[in-house]
Image (cartoon, rainbow, N blue to C red):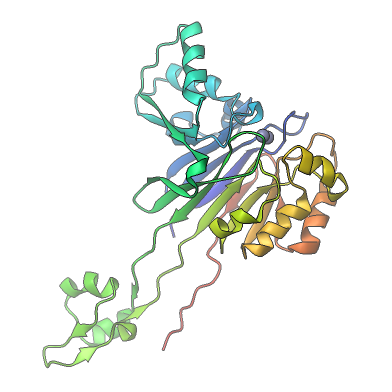
Length: 315
Ligand SMILES: [Zn+2]
Ligand SMILES: [Zn+2]
């Protein structure tokens, strides 16, 4: 299987703590690097974790609250100083381009690489942002004080897997392999049809990762998240602070767990913690009471996205 990992660069909400940075994550999907959010200090976190900055292909910014983008100008400047020449694509709600342009202008920075901005309009609902050879990236609206997007990275369907021993025993020629992998039956020279199900295993299920930060509890997003393998959902507060969470358009760990359960997620990753919590275990316990496969994200954490079920036995 190709690589599909999430690296946590920052797990704090609005204000950083001595142990936690503001929001940023690095997703490696089939060796393409996608940075999701870029809070202050993200480039330092990337350096600490030995990521080559200029390997980053895409940047997705969920919304224009400072804890999600204040690190962007610094990262872009450093990429430039490192001699980047490849295009960099930034996806975000409207306003990001203007913010970066004025900073480049004021600091008289001339970029040596093409920097492109794609504006996401969250009112458009669930939309595809781009595709790569083996995966697609989508955005969907969250419920926050300003326009905010969630993101979904989903691998494409894979072809069927050939049952080698049966292919060999039937002496099927090599030039038929591709169509069989794509679902075709095999017509033998004697006219007998061998059904595809006899010749193949089902493909490995495509994996997916969803990022939901920042947002108030909202069941409308569940339809975009159904069966996601790994769900990151903000959990700024404990349930005792439920009213503050609601008022500030954030979620509690319990609410994150409810969304994970409704969406039948494989695993839930908590994050975007309020700086008021030194010890995060109580948040985890609250989430696990509802959704046992809950985990705390922390700086430096690396998560492999795993295939959940694999039906190898057919017939
Ligand atoms: Zn935030
Ligand atoms: Zn926010």
